[in-house]
Image (cartoon, rainbow, N blue to C red; front, side, top):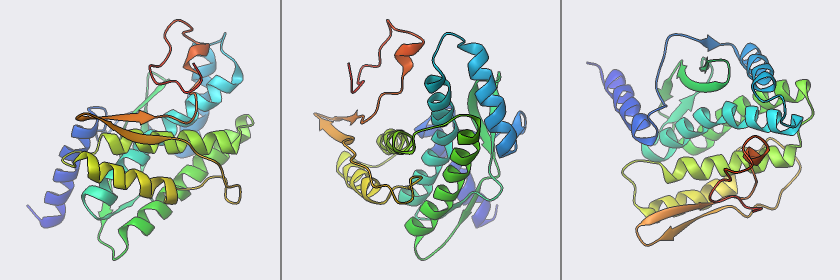
Amino acid sequence: MTEIASNLNNFRLSAKLMSQKLMEVDHDLYQDDDLVSHLANSLQLAYPKAKPAYWRYRAWQLLIWQPIYLSLLATYKFRQELKLDNFKQALINNSVIVGFSGLQLSETSNHELHSYSQLQQKLQHYFFILNQLGKINKKIGQRLLMDCGLYGIAQLPNLNNKEKSLIANHWKEHAPDITISHKIQYSGDIRCNSSELEVIRDTCCLHYLVQPKQLCSNCPIF
């Protein structure tokens, strides 16, 4: 086995430790434009009583979680750049994004800068397509993006809480920015409670619009 193949295998195993849903697949894969439109339409059909805001922000969160988690893993665990040029995501049952293809890692002298640059381009592209289907507030989208990053950092394998807290601080300062020129006030954080990490979210995901009696345990508005 070559060094590159071995490194990719180690990366795949670490990704599964972050989430069992992070896996390479060879089916149900879509190009970005088709992925976004299929997802947005299917969420409207699945939750007809929910408000348009829920469909759009739910689609946004589903689109961004895998590239964010994988970029964090590549950057802070493997010290490499995650290349997203050929990255595709899988849409399962027309309403859940689980699985991906086109995984590529590359050594670079400044892995943090390059990984975030690649990630920002991908997320801005998703946002542009989704925003054409229905207006999305950039600042809310950015806050949800940053919340997602904190969840991913909390799941990074084989790092202690102090290391994760430092990474969270770096993420809050340098996370990909879809707003371009609109700086936001962000209150999300990671806190250590005894031996566990708690993610303090900044923004509500609007899950209560589809299941009013099942609020998120760390919802920032309830």
